Length: 322
Image (cartoon, rainbow, N blue to C red; front, side, top):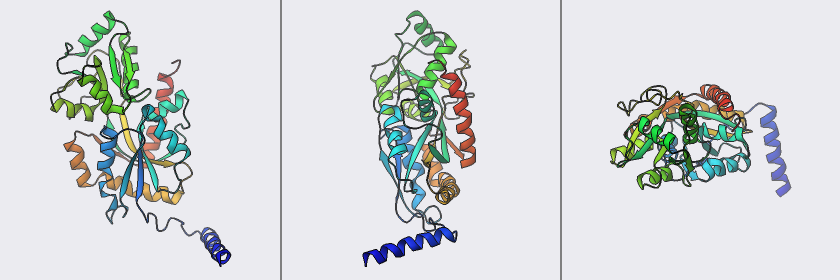
């Protein structure tokens, strides 16, 4: 009987393939996981929880999404797991952070690069910002840079890990000011990096605008500059690094979205690519993102593919020789 059932199932699968019937016609028929390579409470984590809220709606995916945190080593632990162990059936997605995983792939020592994953859609673009504690003597980038030049290697600066957006911004600042920061990657992602600044464990920090804006509202930090091409609507009075005299572009802006492992069935990818941007644009999502000072930038699969390629070229040049 068992052999008969097995043969019947194999026959049905073969028939479906031969007739072109989608094996993902009923996808999804159970909840979908979203691996987050950073700890609970940080910007990637809480934004992922927000943007997946409508997933279970019948006009979206019809199944809820749940978050699986795998923090460590600036995202490497989670993305290594996702690249090598995650199922390729559409039931485990991952939040991506660019430039993080692309820069890490360029530098090596990880089991992934920009070609290991398939992007689905982008939900946000979160610029890096330079922060100091509320009682810091530094009130501008000019103050911070003057100290860094007078005290080489003593400007302790926290960030979420090596070759994440925070680190990319630090490298760009060092290059632009011809000075040296003591960049300290913290365990626990952006939330831990923020705590280091608030507690006075570091003189400065580079963090996400969304995290820093919440800390600013709480009166815990001062924000000296935004690492983007223009001032941000959430912080209209905060200058860009370029306004502060530093030739720094937007290579460190943290793009966030969802991806699946390469090898996931194309019809599953197509269904996700069609529905996920609608989920990100849901009114419930956009309202909560605004309430948490989380910048929204919805991009389609094709737009993300182009962005990944552009960032790969930019970062390869920036990281050359490091």
